[in-house]
Image (tube, rainbow, N blue to C red; front, side):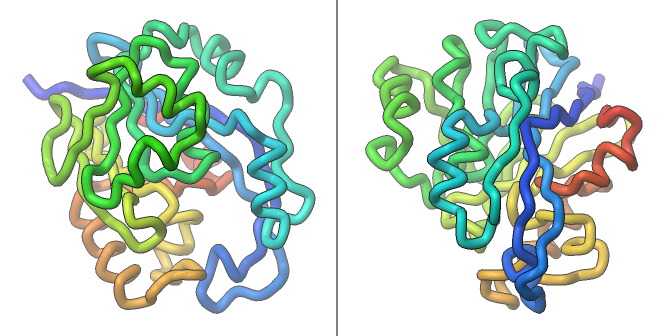
Length: 239
C-alpha cells in the first residue's frame, strides 16, 4: 500500500524580514519568519527536509540589510537539541532533503553522519561552493543523491523550481491528510501562494509559473517560514 508519512515542523529560530523580500510589492517594514526543520516520520528511518542553521552569526551578518537584528535562536532550537526533543538521533537520519543551498537550509548537514543529502541536480552549485564542513562530508562516497522530476523515495517526489535559487526544488510527500508540498523559499508565507503575491527579488512571471507547478504537485502547501504553520497544524504535525 501507499506509504503515509507524518511531517513535523520543528522551529529552529526566528527573525524579522523586510517586506520587500517577502513580497514584490513590499516595503521596508518587517514581518516575523520562523526557521524550520521538517521531520518526516513513518518510513524505515527518520528523514528531514532542511538541516537548520548552524552558523547563525555568519548568516545574520550576510543578511543584515534585510533581516535587521539577525536570527534569534534559543539553545533548545539548535538542530541537535531540537531533534533530540522529537526523539531523533542525528546518526539515525537516513535522508536529508535540501530545497536549496542558502545557509539556513543546509549548513548543518555535517551533523548527520549516516545520511544521504537529496538535492536538485539542476542548478547544483558544486560541492566546492558549499560550507566547508558540508563539503568535507561529501568526501565520503555515496553521501550525495542528485535528483530531478522523480519519485526520489517511495511516496516522496522531487521537482525542480528554480526562481529563488537556480537549485531550488520542491518536495511532495504522501501523508494521511493528502500530498503535502514543501516548496522551500519560493513560498515564504501563506499569502504568497494563497493570495498569489509574488515574492520579492524574483522574476514575477517565472515565479507565477513555479507557483502553478507547486499547486499542481500536491493538496497542501506549507510555506517555508510562516509562523502560522504552527497555528494551522496543531503543534506543527501534518498527517
